Image 1 (cartoon, rainbow, N blue to C red):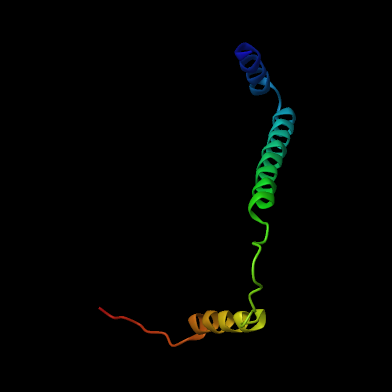
Image 2: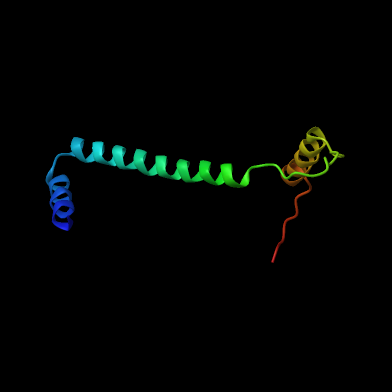
Length: 85
């Protein structure tokens, strides 16, 4: 089995650019599929809501967005200081 993989790897190394790029695309797609599958499994296992009392939302999404926007704009357009040594 190890010889098969070594032979296949040598074949890919000695092949042209097109074949190498095809293998890169295939292996990248396979890796992304595995990562997304693990992610979906994790979400399915841990994403279920907890049974219990309903918690009333006191702060809305719009208020959170506004406060975050204010913080970001104050950092961008706030007073600037220059330190001269």
